[in-house]
Every structure is written in C-alpha cells, then in structure tokens.
Amino acid sequence: MLTYPEDLIYTNSHEYVRFEPEVAEIAIVGITAFAIDQLGDVVYIDLPQVGSHLIKGDSFATVESVKAVGDIYAPLSGEIVAVNSDLVDQPESIVNDPYGQSWFVKLKVSDRQELEGYMSAQEYRAKVEGA
Image (tube, rainbow, N blue to C red; front, side, top):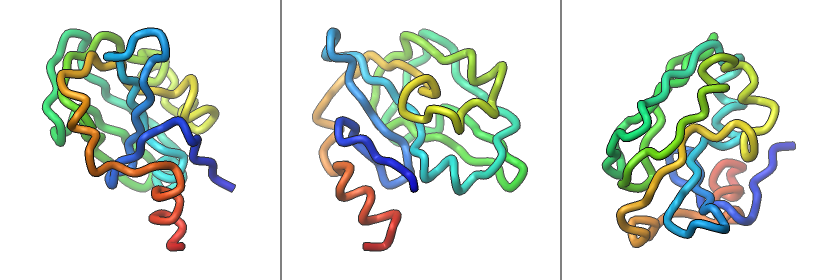
C-alpha cells in the first residue's frame, strides 16, 4: 500500500513539497511513491546544478526507468540550494524512501503563494486511487 504523508503538499504531476521546519523558505522537492510505482525500476536520474533558478512549471530533472523517461516539474519558483547527489549515484534507491532520503532538490522559494491550487495528502490519495 502506497503512503502519502500528511505534512506534504502534492502536485498534479506527482511532485511533493515539504518545507524545512527550521528554515521556512526552504522547500524539499521530490516525487511521490505513486509516481515511483508507475515508473517501475529506475535506472537513471538527472538533476540540476546547485545555484540554478527554477520557474514554477518548468522541467528541472529527468527520471529514466525500464518503462519510460519522465520529466520532473518545479512546483515552485526559486533557487536550488542543494541536490541529492546520492540519487544520481544510486537511482534505484529512490524506491526505498521517497519522502525521506530520496528527495531531489532543496529550493529557496521565491513566492509561497505559488502553492495555491496544490493538494493535501487526502486530496492526492483520492486523485491517484480514483476515490
């Protein structure tokens, strides 16, 4: 059974956002367990450079699996302050902990109002489970 932590914000394109508790403007961005499940065995992940600026909605990373290649979209605008290079070195590890150790980037957010229209865990679960 796939999980959807309550403390996350979810997008229609299956990214999630979690804000760092100690630094309110830093968002952790990754992809959901549902997205990982749909991709299958992940063999390659391409991440951007620290210091890159993202615009909400732009593709910023690529995940390649044995089934497909998928783009990952920026849920918010801002500057990348950290990337998870462990995913580049071991892309298959993404399945182990999608909401913990398998984050993609940390983003210094330009405008938190860009979160408007995204989903809670309950809303996201209903969307992907067809409830």
